[in-house]
Length: 272
Ligand SMILES: [Zn+2]
Image (tube, rainbow, N blue to C red; front, top):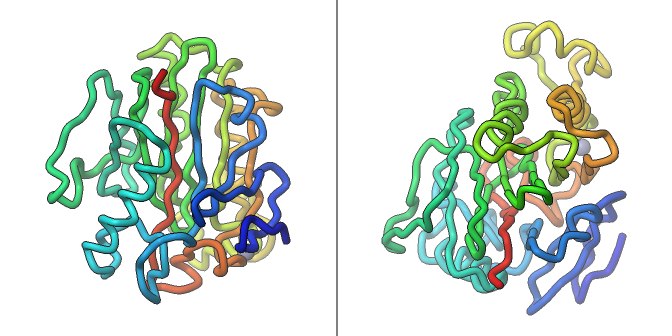
C-alpha cells in the first residue's frame, strides 16, 4: 500500500498515486510523459456523497442525492482547471463522439448527452469524463496528431470491440497511425473477479482463450489483445492492474457492492 496524503491507495504496477486538496488520484506512467495532456484516475475518495455512495460519486443514476453529485462533478472540473467539461449517461453502447466544438449545457441538467460511451477531441481545455465501477475506462492519446480519447468498455463493450472502433475512429477522423497511440486501462474488474456464469450465452467463442478457470475471464488481456489487434504497440499499453472489486476502500465496485457510486477517469489536452 502507498500513502498518498492522508489516504492509503492500493499499489498499481503502472499508476502513480498522488493527492491534491485532499483528493487522491492516480496517473499512468506512459501518459504522464506528455506534458501537453492532463489525465486523472480518481478514486471514490475526496467527495461529499454519503454511504453507500461515499464519497466522490459522479453518477446521477445510482440513487445518490443530485446536489452531492453536482458538487463532486464541480470538484473534478475545478481540479483539472479546464474551461469545458463533457460526460454522458453511458449506455454500454459503441457510440463514440468526436468533439470539434466546445460543448455547452445547462448545469441544472444532469446529463448533457445520452448514450455516448466515448469521446475524442483535439480541442484544448475540454475535459472528457468516463464513469465506472468495474467497467474499464480506457484512455487513448496520439501524441503525433495531438488527439485524446476516452472510452467506456464494460463486458458488452468488449464483446462489441469498442476498442477497435475507437482506434478506427482515430485513424479515420484524425489520420492517426495506431503505432503512435498510447493506451491506459484504468482500475476495473480483474481476472480474479470476472466471473461469467452465463459465458456461453454472453461471450463470443473467441473469448475462450482468455478463460482462466471454469467461469473466469481476463478482460484486461482481452482489451490488450484488441488494442494490439488494432495496431497499438504492446509497449504503448498500460494496464492499471488494480481490481475494483478487490479494492472497495479505493474504488466503487458494482459487482462487489451493488448499490454504489461511480468513480471518474478524465483526460484533456491542457489549456495553453
Ligand atoms: Zn478482484
